[in-house]
Length: 421
Ligand SMILES: *Cc1c(COP(=O)(O)O)cnc(C)c1O
Image (cartoon, rainbow, N blue to C red; front, side):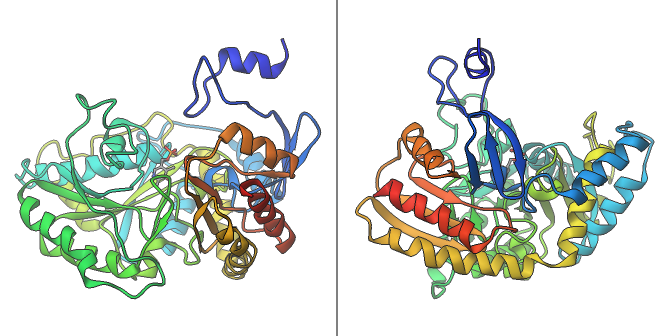
């Protein structure tokens, strides 16, 4: 049995059928912006391995960080133990995130960091003697992960709500932000959120949202004023603001964080994906001193969460190296360049009859089609065109590594154009 056959028979892939799986491509190497397939093709990567590999693959600085830490020690429990990689990483994070955030919980994946954020918000109000404030408000079209609390705040239509109706916590949903990034702000856009906060404040612990770009729930880019107003409203109605920066964090939207477009500080922030530059799984939930103290007031007096691999030193060391590359600042010219190239080379797609919309922000380019694409078919075309792009539904989108050059972006955009044509 060859690898592809074996894989098909025994290995689960993301959102894939066990009986009729979509075709899989075997990768044998990855360096810079290129993936090499077992069949010999070399593909320009348009996905950064789902927002993560911002510096490209096989990066010498990240490789070195992993190797050095490996020779020191790979892992120790975090209960009662600390270590330099966690200290260094936390210092760097606190220097980057909006002022006021200052307690860092190291989680093992994005979904877990969202679970932790929601648990913090619930425990915060439970410990203030307000256990009735236990629901979460979330705009539609959101995506926050695949675990149960995270699923409960994902978009109720394109998420998994109907499938797990009986077990998912019932949350409160607001209409998605309507004013697009770059459009003139429409004051009506914030009214539904205000009405829901007014009506449900007694039972709401938090508002959770993805700042500026809603990712997997629709790849929608919205006006920073929505975020600014959401912050004000949360203060007004005594509801915590959880900002899920797992996709938007670390420069992807043109600012270091989505929050920076609106210059706000959330009460709780989730980071993941690009945190380790795409090397290994790690995420973090960062909260303000007020939240941390609130959570630990009264019984049980501690925050009730602690993953086995919490603060994994290998992941911390690589994340720290990745943040050092970000601190050097090249992303501040790379991302606007990619934005310009995406705007230029994706523009012709808008003329195609199959295309409903083309939109770009930072190093994110989205072509929305009128009907869902045939993933197997379009992927075969992309591989033939020398690119790696993985669409879902009506969304053909790219978020390439920041080190991508103009000719890479051109190749990605041309492949999308010819596929949709
Ligand atoms: C990917 C993602 C998550 C989930 O992260 P995982 O590491 O896949 O668990 C949560 N929120 C947002 C906004 C994401 O893009």
